[in-house]
Length: 210
Image (cartoon, rainbow, N blue to C red; front, side, top):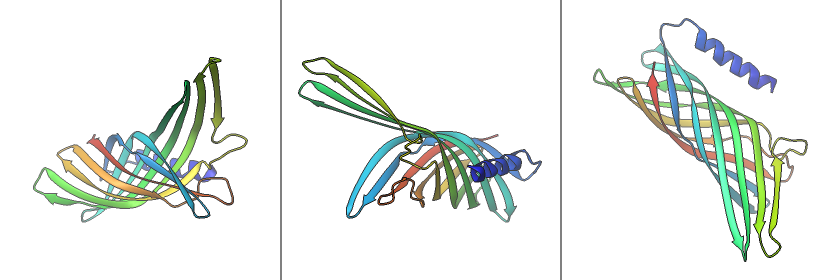
């Protein structure tokens, strides 16, 4: 937790630094994520829809080489519904995270208005909240049950901190940016000794330079 706060503070300081070579942009996009768990020889996966919005600051270093620092909020969502006889079982997962991506990039210009920029680097993520709501409704006896499980509560299933490596490319036209890439989690984020859980997924989004 202290390390994450220090990273966010560092990024915030870089954002407010009076660097004339920096370019601030607002970004949002779609980032579905897969959580894969391995237990002995068994592997299970859960797929989430994810959406993010944030700000990125690109600092030009030298001859097209830059360093991008960002802070973004992200939400992961998943809903499963199954009806057996007349009983409907519904499971809803919701997770809110803060991401701090850091990426080296290299810009290649194609004329005055078009630039292509591949990028690669780490991304630190911190889970602010995560919950599963399981409900059961219907049946002959008119069942109406609902229970909420906190991912980061007293009997936590997951660790809040995650570290990923990401890579992708940004296409810029004047001030508009279209970017896409892939991220792969490096840390085991579950709290169980005999199970390993890691995340992965692609992302795509739009940005506007301020």
